[in-house]
Image (cartoon, rainbow, N blue to C red; front, side, top):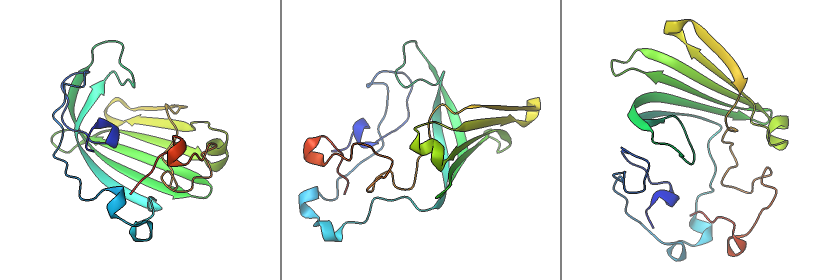
Amino acid sequence: PCGACDGLGGPRWGDTSEDVSPVRCEAVASPTQVPPSARLPGQYPSQGRASVNGGTRSPVAVRPDQPGSYAPMHATLYLGWSRGAARQRYDFRSGKGARTASQIYLQSGAQQRRNESGAMVTVVPAKGECVCDTAIAGNMHIDSFAADALDPLQLPPEEGGLAYL
């Protein structure tokens, strides 16, 4: 049950499925072993922060059509949600800890409902640059894994929807 489609990642050095060293994964229970009443709701907290230490692909591509290069990445990710807006901020740091850039993603509730990605602000202090553009993707939102009002299909697992422990 542990693979790339389950969100398992690891160090990458190329674009093929063989060019990755997956982190260790161990299934602790199957869905049939955990009654629904004992499962935690699949929901993000309304605020969060995470350290990201790994690698990033350049150029960024969901489905690469050309070779990419991989470089170390050190960042802090901040997340915040309210009924009116979703916010994500990445502060990128050099190996020595200095902030090299920030990317801030902002998306209103109305933009989420219209499936519009919102705005992305990129700040590069060393170059004195600040660029505002349409975001490359929408923000994650607090109900991503719950009964999601922004999911127009609401498919049950037996019809192709997702099931989470």
